Length: 356
Image: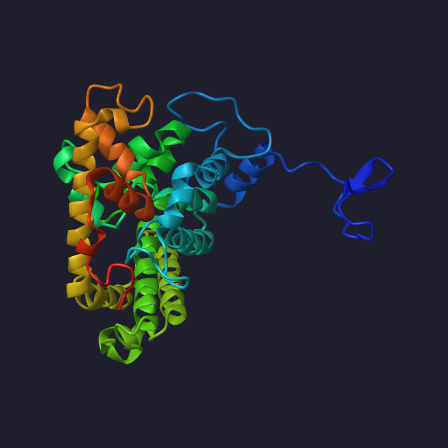
């Protein structure tokens, strides 16, 4: 299984016939030139090693934003998204996790970036990293951690400035991650703006699909304000919103949607909030998550010796505890709560592990 030598080349398959080239390598400089020649005015251009807090030598083959994308994908924080809540704790095989959400956001963002002439690689890097600051248990973790963090806990800045800080990402990538939420200041790049829209488009469509599959509601329940513009299925909704975003952006020079399509997306989001996110089972789940995570943070503040080596060496024990608990997967957090603070898992609501 060492491969098949044919002259100076070792091939994976003895019968392969898939010629490519020969020709000059497509180096970083070549791709940077292509960006300058083909991307739309205002698109963010890759340049050398990128604008990083710690200077680096440029890569011979990858642009700075390609390196950022690769670093996010290979990071521990990104892998842990597979075990973190999107809508419900302990999702079933077909329900989204925070990881699959990030992948779907990246798909939408890349489609829009390509269609508008923005830098698709930067948009992809931002999208893949945008939720790495989320704690276990979904958005409830932000409420859980708020009292322990000066200024409150916000998963965007926390992800950019704490969770992913060791990756030395470009400032443009960090800015997009930091400011992807609509409640934050506007991102500094059009690619960051695209990810802000892609995030909302993706979660509105796929959270609805998960809820329909779980029997929480039916596609027939969707209001006319949504269906007459965007249809009833995830496929149709994403197609309409992505096309609308591309067409409005190229027509106006501003990243945004036309009013009728934007109104349909807003109506879909409002419907999801009423029928999915704020339903009694979801509220009970959030309350349980807050109690569990605060019990864990309080334990680590009182017992810093239980924190991983080196994490408790700084002066702010509360921040160290939040950093550790925030990085946990759902399952590990609940296991630690049971082991360290004697948390009774029967206190979790019956619907915690499923939508219905």
